[in-house]
Image 1 (cartoon, helix red, strand yellow):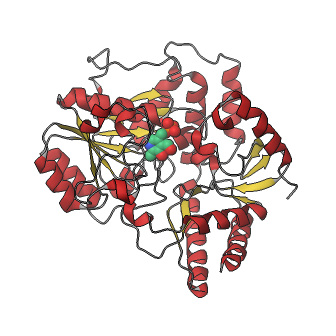
Image 2 (image 1 turned 45 degrees about the horizontal axis):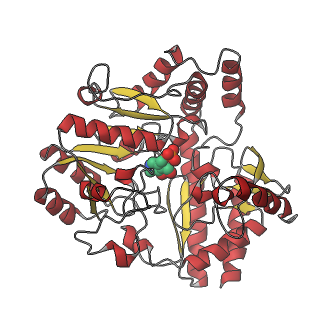
Length: 433
Ligand SMILES: Cc1ncc(COP(=O)(O)O)c(C=O)c1O
């Protein structure tokens, strides 16, 4: 490595201008954040000129690789025709048609710009549609940072309370106390507790979940039949089922994880991989619910940047590229290769660790405990993860130094990148041993 003096000095400068030197809290890590100067294909370069194979991929959006030529060309073409109109454009129809074609739950689509906005609008819509106000959310699940979903994303075991009725633990200061009364927390993968909770409370407008918990819990897949159970019980009790596919959408399948698990929610939110890194998100769902948005209904929904032609051009080009090439099949194979190779090596070394994941997402966690809900993840030894991360970085492989996040593979990762990563991880694990 060439050292990190430039990142360090940029951080000193940034700290004077923005709190903690970062514009999104998770970009901060010890001893100082990494400043990136370029990203291309599967690689990023920091301000000091160090090159890394990138498994962070900006928290997941970059499914085709950084600065993908086809996506860049589509955006460059659009740049000459205007960046934003604040009026309708034909591209938004083309992208909406793609989503309606691929995603089982999507009869109608509304665009916005971030996953946070999408989950916010979906929940407001569900409340207006049902005339009820409470929501159910899973412990350890992340759905963005607006008030109602900012509970129990990473609670300590002490604060979390009893498993059968966890406390709603605020993730942040600044949320009105009364908001906690509107959110009910339940453990993922526990049918009995979910059923009891739903039977005990009326006033539940929506149950929001990722089909696979990735957002802030590495990777917790649903137990066999769990998503189907959620579908059936929410239908029975008149609760809107929202799948937050901000991470899983387009990354695991063009039709979302709902297509893989064959369970169709009422509403779905997308963002991240939909436009290979350009800011775009969507709320989609049943026509009779979606038409509650103004002007057909009375639920407000607006935004200066919604469906801007730059993001739409990027989304269309990304979806077309995912349709054209067998991207997902290869990504799933590469994910398996990393997980299988490293798990075998971990077992040979008798390390208390495992590589979890699904498709192109993987993460190493330092526990042998089988992970079925958020509390299981708390047994992981995070200090070992941080050492592993540093060893990988020294070898030119970047994984985010946040143990509850995850690594992503893009279509630009070569077989050579994957082999190098496996060998580097083996060396790093040997060092830890
Ligand atoms: C599952 C999930 N939902 C929502 C969000 C929020 O998306 P954004 O960061 O675009 O606001 C995220 C972000 O990581 C997420 O992982």
